[in-house]
Image (cartoon, rainbow, N blue to C red; front, side, top):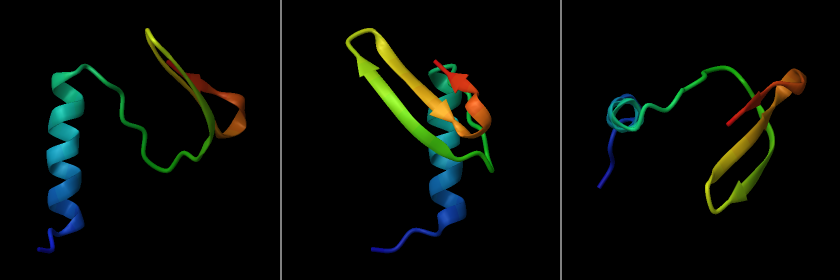
Length: 50
């Protein structure tokens, strides 16, 4: 079964909104640190998102 990317992004975007998550487009991920209480993501240009 194939699902168009636009549909996948719509579904994931809805779920992210339900979880109060931030979605950033056009930003590269340089790394991440997962712990029992959450995940911290290192983004391009030194920014972080927790």
